[in-house]
Image 1 (tube, rainbow, N blue to C red):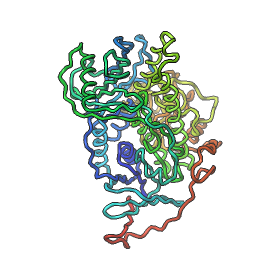
Image 2 (spheres, rainbow, N blue to C red):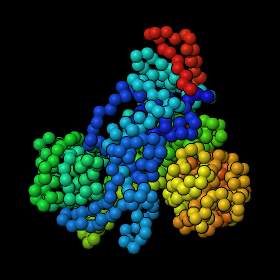
Image 3 (cartoon, one colour):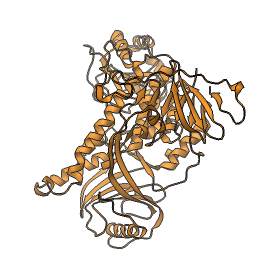
Image 4 (cartoon, rainbow, N blue to C red):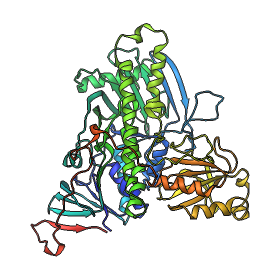
Amino acid sequence: MDPVIIVGAGPVGLALSLALAAQGVPSVVLDETSGKEDPRPARTVVLRADMAALVERLGCATVRDEGLRWVGWRGMRRRQQLRQVAFDLGLGGTEEWSEDPDSPAAPAAPLHIPQHALARGLRDALAREPLVRLVTDARLDTVEQDRTGVTAHTRGPDGTWWRGSHLVGCDGARSTVRKLLGVRFPGRTAVERHAVAALRTELPWPGESLLHRQPPWRGVGEEVTARPLPDGVWRIDWLLPPRGELVTPDALVTRIRETLAGWCEGTTPPYELLDTGVHTLHHRLARRWRVDRVLLAGDAAHLLGAVGTQGLDEGLRDVDNLAWKLALTWHRAAPDALLDSYQSERRTAIAARLRAADQALPALRGGGGLRTYLPGVMRGHDALLTDGHLGRGPLGASPAYPHSPLAAPFSEGMVPVGTPLGAPVEDVRVTAPDDTTVRLRDRLGQARFLVLLVAPGSGVWERRHWRTAGLMPRLEEAAEALPVASEVLVTDAYPGAPAHAVLLVRPDGHLVAAFAGVRPEELHAAAEAARGSAPEEAPEEGPEEAGPAGAAGREPVVPVEVPAPAEASLGHDRTVDVH
């Protein structure tokens, strides 16, 4: 079968190719650049703990070697510290957490890494993967579809035709794939602008990130953020006024010196300036993310990033959601509706994130109004902004898909657990079939569903003593009968789950259903729904979501004739099939 064609070799495209390879799907990655990326220390990304675990699972060693997990977070306004949050560095943490010091739940530490280091780590992992072929200097100019696949043409030293089962556009904000599909990309331009500097110095909070609103120093601005990196490097962002203030080198140096002096008791400490820039944030959302066999992901599908939201983190969530669905489709183990759910779930989640940011911006960035006259309202604004940076609340929490077309049908055997249906499961410790104890997150991303049994006391016994006792034989028999590949895991406890509960978890870690005990028929029905075979079809999107093909939501198929490789010669287009 033809490989998946991935257009774009940024972190999202590279991660998708590796995620597909982990599930037995070959791909060809078309990179319009030479494959070399200049280091830019001021261009960094923040990854939530689950997405950092994803890229590490894909073989990206730079996450460990060149990234830094924050030990804490400080929020300040003027000269007052409003809050301090300590992070869980055990790589566990929880999605739902509290700032109550008596609460055992602590947020998992975010990871901060230069984007060029992340991309290099993914490229190194890709070089070791035989199922992925990376092609440089390949600029896409044509995409055509028929009933059995996609044909793409790239310009380069020799024009080339490529044949694939599907094509995914991961080619950034100016996506050629999106333009060739005729998909609109509405939204807002220059929602926020930041002056950015990467520098090596010593600040009073080693390993902690800082959000400082309304600092009491002239010439600094309304908001400054400092985020640590390894080797004493910090990325500092200054929020710029919305009317396009020109940031000259002298003005930026003044901002740096004034900011460092303000944080270091009036004296500017020694510093080494490594990189600078101006970062402009846009909010845009593609009308459609799927047109038959062509899909969009990452910046090609959405742009966000204001008030602390993280664009690349969301792009990797696209990968996590799409890879297993595309793999099951490629292996012909799922109906077409499974790929439709990618747009339904991810586009809805991003739309909610953008809507929350747009609603927060007037209060956070506007002047006057209630902010001036209501006592205490600023503290609420600070908390809202912190949510976006720390990955919680409507601005930052990991997305849940409670209304997904893949949702399991209700049954009497369902029981509530600490994780809502459709939300990411907690990263508890589990016993695997090989009798090893691992984290649940380590078993994700393999195109198989996880069947998790909550068995108190199992952690103190070797698996060979209980795998043939109690519920296990019946559970393993039920798992083998599922319409999808699955793996049975056992945990000593799961938050909010009663003893002997059985959880069905998607390959991307989202909870499908939880049952009181082993219920083979209900478990089977839930798995069938989660692979896109629900008895009721999801409602079609309204006319405003229709693309060029109209309300039917489909592009006309274009039959293509691909010249055979034997007919190719130097100076002529050639056809390449990658297997």
